[in-house]
Image (tube, rainbow, N blue to C red):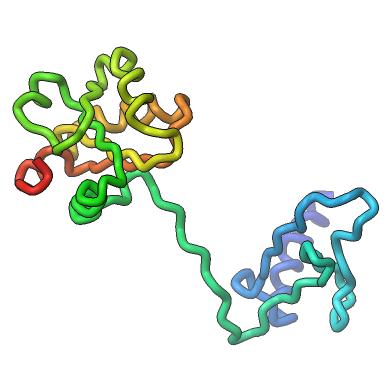
Length: 184
């Protein structure tokens, strides 16, 4: 039994290689949206005779041909995908809620114009203020002291279960923002 399984693992990649297939040639399809149980979700391929997913209009989707360009999906933004220039533009256009995760004493010494203070060590006490200031899907940018400070990440992690979904952490933090006089 073990020898049969080993042979299968060796023979399958070898067979694909000899057939001219490789992992990079493989095309994945998403299934059609859920439809009535009697609706057909696959259609036979005219050339290969294999079943292919069917679009919502009932048409079989074809695989891209070799050398055909396929539109690439853009990668989703991560929590750290924001620059100082983007923050400037968002603040200038009033398209963002800024949260300063530093302690109130640090916030009082300087912060981004219009920012809300939500110290990581006492975030629950500031939640009502943030809920009034930001809609659940609105862009929120959180910063703290700088790259070695984790307060902004703590506030981010706290806001996720509260329903906020569109947030970024500016990891360079106040250390980078302090030099931007147009943001203070």
